Length: 148
Image (cartoon, rainbow, N blue to C red; front, side, top):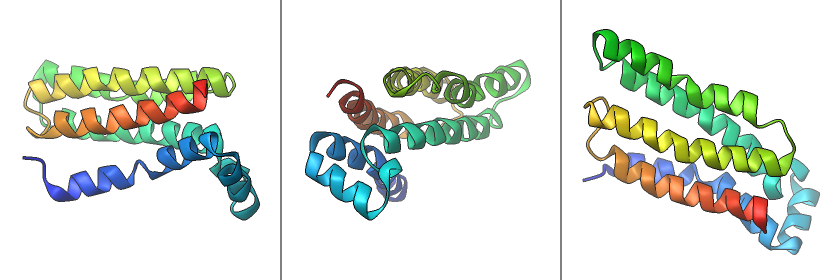
């Protein structure tokens, strides 16, 4: 069973993605957001900036999982854990459409890393349930930003 606190915090962490998608779908909400809190908090911009931050955050989470491993497996885990941050750094500079697609690929790709750490017992047993839920919502929101 998934603990309540990680679920609540994980869902709360989706707010910038959901807000970005809503402002893409609602021009009135986008205009209000731009007037009230600034353009970087509307449309794809908030999702792209926050998405790069979250991919980097996930590198830290995976690094923590790597500390649970031993020997060569730990070394591989540390090496794999930096991939999301490097992906965010190198792949999100090509304009909003390219950056959005790259982030979608990055978030889907991280599921493979999550699964590897989970399979090797470095992640909690409930981890994949949480990650699948959060990733589905993040990728849906990013897709709205890219394709709507």
